[in-house]
Image 1 (cartoon, helix red, strand yellow):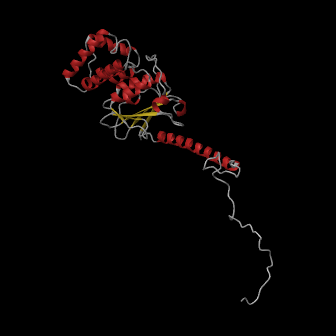
Image 2 (cartoon, rainbow, N blue to C red):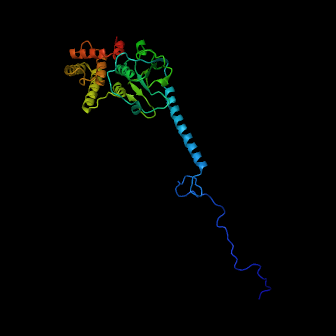
Length: 317
């Protein structure tokens, strides 16, 4: 039995709407937008956030370009150390014998803000004669900034080796005006070595291999697989048997050269090629030019008449 009763102060059928959430947020999964975009309630992207994202993309793009420029300048500044600087640029007087075309961007890669510099370390006791000829040919095709340096590991270098790439160019201070750099460093090394891009390319060793690399920049490599194989065969024969072999091996190679040159003016037929450059330089380095057979001597005279071998004959005098 209740102690007392109280009359109700409100009707018993009243309904109260209680909240189902504390606060609302924009729908980030609105239809037609990506999950990583900030969306409004109607599914549209916030213009302020879109403008911020575009600004961020532009800043990142400029940073990537700046990084590429700085990396290129760093590679230029950190060219191997040298005690003597004899920066030169030469333009061979002879007309180029190659008519092919080569795309430096596809062969060497596009480098923003820096000169694409080919750095070669060579021993002055064994000058790379074939590379000097290729340098002359490259100067006919491109604007080449050439420089000669002497490394601290070498005590003295004959004056002709310091000027083997020609006289100093008047615009050598403006590196951005040139398409290609050719840096020759006289250094105490056991084997010739070429460096181009230390980040994405391993060094190339050996004069013949570096010559193949430079020859590709002229766009004159044989398109016929048979001719390309014959060219490589002549190059290897000249390097390993004529330049580095004994007297019997040299005599055998000279006979082979004489037989091949009796059938055609050049080693690959009617076209002058890298095989002629490397083989002729090996014959001259071995001192066999005067005692060589008649066809070989005629061939050496033809090479000399091209004008690109003048730097080689000046060093051998």
